[in-house]
Length: 506
Image (cartoon, rainbow, N blue to C red; front, top):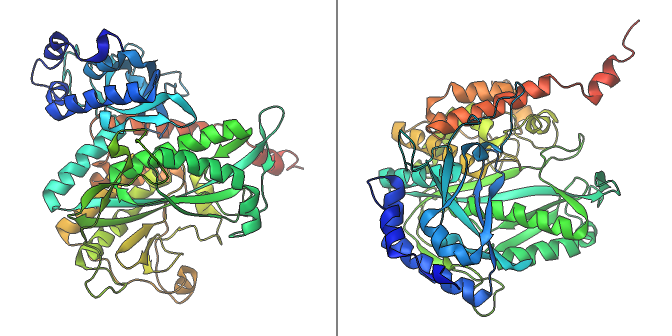
């Protein structure tokens, strides 16, 4: 390492001057110690380059890269990117940049040393997640947390929830995705397997891909617990052990990054698109959620021999404690905390749908009936036709969410719904044990979830509780992006238009 091996005292003093969020973040002595430990890891692992990354409003991984020799300086100063990077650096239909104008300042992205991890496919490279701040020279709120940082928002909202209720949220996701062939032109050239659910032969066909994904995942702190072939071409679900909400969101983001890398290696397409085909299952991403008190963080280096290729926190999971959704008798009916939380979810399901089903394509999944996609506002015990399902004693499965979800926004939305349910002691009503279609035939009145993105966005905008998951500038950026997505869809001629109208008359 060069002279940047430690943060110079004068640089640290300048960076932490003033009473701002950024200054307080840099003044944390524990962080300075963690930065020094990463310096040692960089040397021991032979890291030459580092990705400084964050997550945009759509869930896309954004950031910059820099030689590892500058780690200590960047840890004290951050990297700067135009604010519009939080909205994928794109323009709307009118040519206006989404979220921020061309003359907007540059955000400050400060690395979180506890998220430092070597990339197993390129071992001279590491990645680190960043927390985002407003520019130091902004005329207003200089150095404040950037409220369009979805990951930073989740961290802060979760801390507020835990302080208020004494409980924390643990999440386990079921990310379905598909592996497609890539043709000579680089485009989609069909599925890699047949649409046969749980078929070991189809799983075996994709095993070289699955094995490589698992190897990389374990090297990056993901405890892979089980997987299967689902009932669409090339569709696989690989599950990761559940954990505290922020770490779970980081791991889902990392899993997507891993799949993209394996696709490059195998000359395939790894897609998390919600509904590539009608008539077969879509790519859902059920969120299994529970509220806990207590427990302790434990390092869990599955599949790792010798020194960890990352900060220990990358391999850390929250274990033990008390599941506040679980009755002491162990029965399926949730405890009061769980029932009030369900009441909050059911009360805010239309708004939550805009976060869990966040794209135009998401609503193809909800329109293709017969594949257990949740389209009605009910809950039940082990009822896969319900939007909220008690999937095991002490665990709720939120089903109206798909694999294009931004997990940071989704977890923040669930926290807001749980908070409202707990504060108002919302009545969940009785669980529906019947198939929802049978219940409706028997006369049960059931409200449908939003049927398209515009309807879902309207429901979200009208719900002040769930809007709390989009604080400050996040609401403006999110709605600018998503309203434009809907407008682009309405302004597009599709294959369906040609099939239906090209020779419609005479």
